[in-house]
Image (cartoon, rainbow, N blue to C red):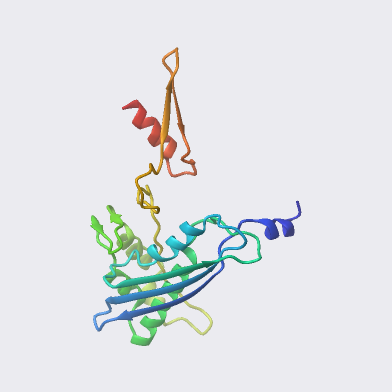
Length: 222
């Protein structure tokens, strides 16, 4: 198949029109976030529910935002169906949020690194939309990047046409948070014990580097 045909037939990322509003108070704290995403899903449902969900709920992290509203719409269109494409649902709206945050910092003459550091979620907390945060290395990441890049020497001081920037990302791991709230099992495992004492584990969890196969083997071994 030629490369052009792959692009035409691939279940790629959802094109998204994003409208976003955000407020900063006098201390540089994010006071609210209001997001409206219109998502082009192509011809079929595919990952539509999940992608629409991720467009909103993942947009507020890694910042501590107490006032948050999200309105998402996904439309069927006469195009190739869109699917899960590396961080699906989180990348488009994340770009919009980080860009707007930079614009707010520029208008208020605030340092984008400082604003992000002042708004980070702490370790061992729960976000306003119910995500549980355990360890959190974002602060260390920003501080080390700031030092290594010589941010304080370069920011707003480089010649025309050159610049330096910062942005943060946020995604879930070990997701046990239900998207469909019902009483049905969200995931099941079938275990078969063979005559020779061997154990076979059947599970629909796809191992894509997150460690699910290792976790299942450890659970069975316990």
